[in-house]
Image (cartoon, rainbow, N blue to C red; front, side, top):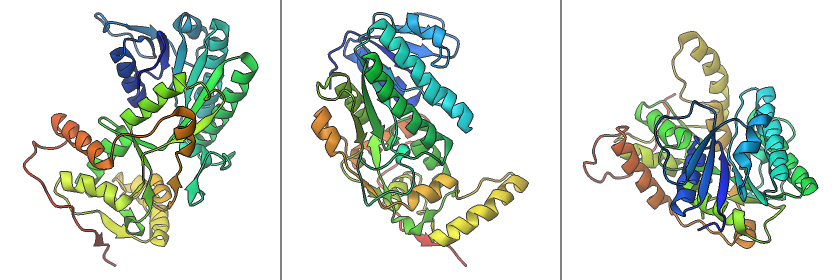
Length: 344
């Protein structure tokens, strides 16, 4: 999708989604200001790209970055503790909206997350589900930041459009692609409840499509939309792609009750031995979910639909993983592996 804007600021421009957003905008000849925290690289930037040193938590760095822009794509996020996460995801968002209002920017596309709804999810998740007020720092701070963005935007005359993506995968995705591939390859992950829980995934280019649509859609101002792939797949199916790529069996299956018990034991064991655990907190939370994310509002409000099937998306990921050396050169098609049970 081609946005009808001339110049845009992208926060979090060096991140996984931010980088793809910058590339897409430049491809469509939109001038881009990329807000980056690190030292600016030497040498000329690509045509149409201006890198600006700053940070959403440094309010004084934003006016120059945002001046003359038609839109802002707010992709920046961060923080591990709740205080740090609030500083970036809440106060940083406040700084962006205030700077946009002062500069007369028409629209801000605010990248949120389905994590604002927490882990206790209904069978079908829609935007009407409540947002959490307590829990993990990421979900809580993103929920607070989203509320603030919509309220402050309405008060300051800025059209804020919120997107709540599900798990974003694609070439270079640090957690959902590189992370899980390495864990499957090293046999350092397990499938909770036989991997029958549902993984709601969105290919990164489909998310960027939605972001571009959100920059222009006339009726989108002041709305929040969940964005995901066409259908969820099971976690066994998802990790099965990685198992096939690296000629490994599917990870062992662990019942949920045992996974929760094991988490407590392995938390101490991992600290004492410094060895990686086969189960992490996100595994137990996510693999236990049996929720399907509805994208009907995004279809209606943004006139957007995902275009990438899971087979096509994972094929692109595999090509990238082999090119980057995470996998050897392709040596033929391998059948999908079967799951195995944990002994004992």
